[in-house]
Length: 454
Image (cartoon, rainbow, N blue to C red):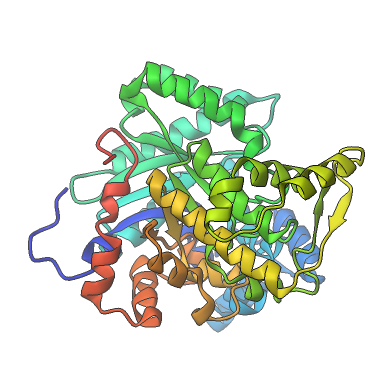
């Protein structure tokens, strides 16, 4: 699907969407349209309960929809759905707002058996925006006791996207795996492809998303090992991996957050979502909350010690001080403690400077691996609790050699488009369109699937 010669600068970046979640593509106007005839019948408990936990207030969605319809405005819906700067830095709050759409989706799926109407709405938005290539990601509920439901859902989703794709609007599918059962669900994906070989060109990759805290990349090691073996045995249906990491990481030290990004790439993830931990200045990151990042689990500290000892020479070449003897003594003392106990260490200017150098080290390794960072400006500002545009990780990414793609993530919840996100980067970096285009290149080179560039 080549674009015409002489295309405007940044046209490729504005028409190729590599980081978008399909259900996050519903806007407030879509929710009102989808719920206007059913809002009194929808089971809102997921939204109401999660919103109360996150915001300490219990919304009445029936009253919200009634008010929006009476006033003929979106304000009541947007206030409880669009995730703004005032909500920032809390993934639970983001998920609570997202759950309003999930409740409507479930009603259309289970109650009305018309779920494809929701999917068509999202794709229609992207067609109108002028997108030419999109890789959609969807996470389905998973229950060990009913694995067939996982297969059936993704088969239905993939077939819909297959039929929606055409030469002017090419659509592909990344199946999101639950972080708590990656290998189990990966086997189900392989079963899906075994039973539906015609879907192989559509299902081009796998995705890890949702809450990252508590799920270190090391927990996916067995999955990546199996994936590499399968890709080697059947290259005609090889799957690539996109991995959300370093997005929300208040449960660990800044050093561990940087390490997670590097480890995800080394395990085999070809594209990394967000990686705020690699681009947000450590001093800014540590100031976002009181004593932010000073405490982490003993298991994480031990993993960090092992990482530092393994990369000792390379880290020191980047200016990161590594005292191997001290680390081994610390490892010995920590090994007797429970893995979920906390170890706390305060930050000082020297330690913060060392984290900056660790970021440089990790970005250099990602560049050498050919790993792509997917930056999503508005999402990172709000979910990632980046305090200001000048602090955004994209500045650091652009100054490095790492491959970079811009995505909208959940455009409906952030009330933005892919073009808005690209324009935001140009506006806040001060780069000309030609200069930003030269730095980004064509994101289609980073597509997943058999025609992907290596």
